[in-house]
View 1 (cartoon, rainbow, N blue to C red):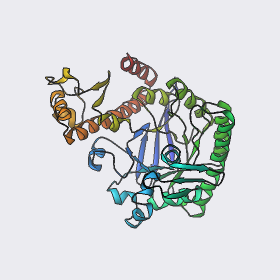
View 2 (tube, helix red, strand yellow):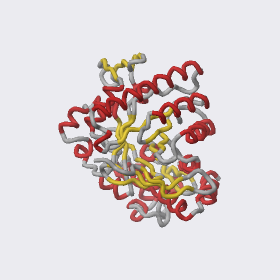
View 3 (spheres, one colour):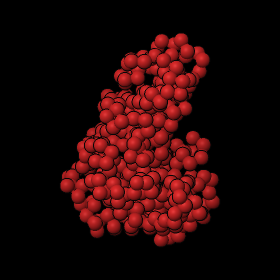
View 4 (cartoon, one colour):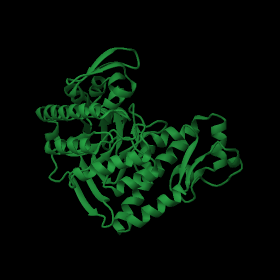
Length: 376
């Protein structure tokens, strides 16, 4: 299966670099800008696939590192792939597992060939290189596979970041070679290269230009939101997008807050993922257009209002803040489901609003007003 047009630019904003697009995949089209709920271990925590779809999700993210450790990509392959394994029939993007190796694995050793490490689960010795990284994602039968990359920490020395960029470029080329040899790209799957370079503008430019020369179907901006201040994170996105092709999708990995997403859309980014909606829900925090609320707070005990008046999700349509607080205080599992459902829907609805204002031509003023109200 091949697409004559994989990514269609429908409209570009006149006052910002924001774009309205349509990304074609084997499991359906994705309207961009889009937020991808994170299904780390073949599940978006506390929610069923039907609930995620009802929230408006068009694509979810799976985690290569975790799924290959447990239950293994070979087992998922034998079940017919990740879509069938988890009963999700829309598109799936899988990350490379590189970030998890660097952040979770024990006793890792990085060379130009790959990464030797020990599982954080049982200490088993493992090795991840571009070929194995591709094979895992091929087993998962993902729609969008991410190349293996090296994510430098923040802060990092320039020489260390330069070494990480060189490996990232080398591994991206090897990954694409294996994907091409296996017919992965020719059968309608997509592979995205990942731009690294930390806060060094010249290294991000070098990485982006090298990846663009390899002609990937799409590109990601990695190595952001790894401990740097928000201004530095946004700056890294802003210095990366100008070097990426306008006719291909751009994905900022592992971000962010609602205002960060809107600001990065204005910089020309199209796709985002983050664990924040479900993680904060499990800690009793919900998103509203005026900011976050901790529903555990005593002031919500007698509050009969929904979390957000008029918001079209199951939680807001049926339950009061007082009831949700009761669930939280009683440690009822339903609290995790209802708060997660609301937060996921909030992020997806924000993307829907962004697309609508891009289509209407007033994204610049709308997103500035929205961010000012939220931050204020």
